Every structure is written in structure tokens, then in C-alpha cells.
Length: 147
Image (cartoon, rainbow, N blue to C red):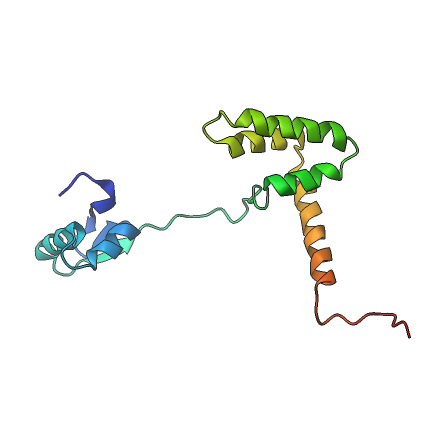
């Protein structure tokens, strides 16, 4: 067996082998290293089936970076009382982040520190999305018709 973690099989029992999704996909392609490795494994354990590891996700965890683009951050900043000063700082942070390994992450960290109540941010964009959906609803009937 190869040491490459992506192309390895983990023995669970005689009927179960734990593999990655990439391994499972490549094992179905004739001639690949994974195909050959799976055939060797099946020769030793004829009843073996492949299973892939599933990652347990926390259903209570919020995706707080969802929709946190520079454009949306700027839109949120413009709604604040100190928008002029913060916008200058925001632009400065974007310029300073250019030397970082991950510029977006650096700006995002600054933004989250500046606006630590993420719920305000999320609520703002939920309300904005609802407003935009109502305005762009092609089936909406105006309440007052001007004749």
C-alpha cells in the first residue's frame, strides 16, 4: 500500500473498509492506482464494501462569514453612524492586507473585531434580502393603483 492518505484503505472489519471520497471515485476507474489497490484488498477480503467517512456538522453553528464580501461589509459600514471614519479605516485595512498570506481573512478579522455583534450584521442582510425580494417580486400587486 502507498503512504498517500488520499489513496489508502483503512481496515474496519472483514466486511468494511473506510476510504476517502476521492479514493472511492478513483477506484471505479480502470487502471488507476486506487483501482489496483482495491482489487488487492478485495482479494484478501472478498465481502468488503467501501464506506466513506462522514463529517458530523454542528447544526447549531452559524456560518457567520456567509455573505461577508468586501461589498457587503462596505454596505453595512455605510449604515453606521460613524460611517465616514470607519470607511477610511476599512479601505486602509484592505490596502494593508495585501501583504498578508490571506488578505480577505485579515480584513474579515478586523471587521469582526470592529463589529463584534454578528447578529446585527446577519439581521441587516436578512432584512435587506427580504426588502429586495419584495421589490423584485414579479407577481406582487400594487396596493394603490394610480388612474
